Length: 407
Image (cartoon, rainbow, N blue to C red; front, side, top):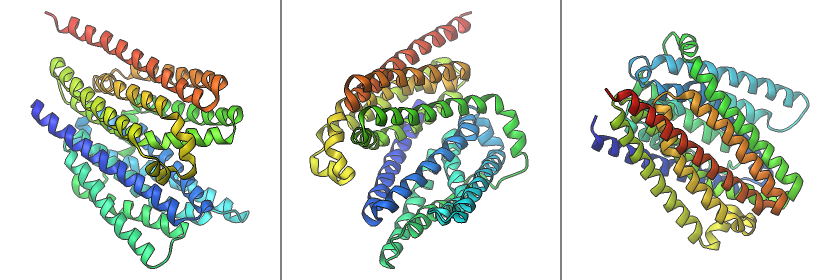
């Protein structure tokens, strides 16, 4: 496997994440300008639901596919069938919630039904991106995201031209375009086949560990926001959420960079070449992180206010610890992708759980010390500790690989 080819694949993945990040930012800005305050808040809640569903899908299906790339090459129809099973189950839950909301005459019943209808397509689209990474054909993933972007722009233009700028139509345009783009996954990797449940059982020893890491991270993240709000007040919570929006593009890139690194390492038999892939992934993650940091630090006020509106002035005070957090996230990419690619799943889950507790504890100490600013410095410090743990684990694993390969 050529290192030049690996470099090109990583470049394509980086381009894909830049485009995906800009697309997500565009949707957020458009929803803020087209929808009213209440509808904008509801749309944010719906996006949280989608993000949670994608997290479950990636844990159970996407991440195990990355660790076992032969599944993506030899039997992609089974992971596709598995993701449809998961999606239909989650959609059924949304339908029940929508029925309850309708019965008690509360908002979002109709929108949850729309989301339930679109969720299978959205999750298939997300899995298609992972299949492209796993088969080392990231151009397919880039094509998927490009098709969604084109369809999304067309749908949003139709919404604006016809003056249907309501939450219902906005959600239809977003989820509908994503579901339509997901049809391309079947052309790229084939239709779903029998054996989705069997595949889930075969990969369950990996899936439940990925799901445990995801659940712990999400639960602690929600608890952290609640504690910050209780200790420092609503303004501090708004500032923290604002700065999270600013670093989200890099967090999205980090997820894809790890996936790309896992793909390269898991497809490589030689430990020496796998380490070379890890170094390349680490370098790209660090360079992109430094560029992101420079953009945040040099961002003019008018751009910040265009993104965060009145929240910008409070969030701007938190940029320094946010930039440190980005740097730490960049440092984690290489070790995490290498260990996952070498199937050291028990090690990665333990590190995830320890890191999550560390970040939460130090972040809370920071919030007690100095409100929102202290909380952000605490989270950054926790991420720095996590990065040190990842690199220590990497050195230990590489040493063992070296001992095993010594005749």
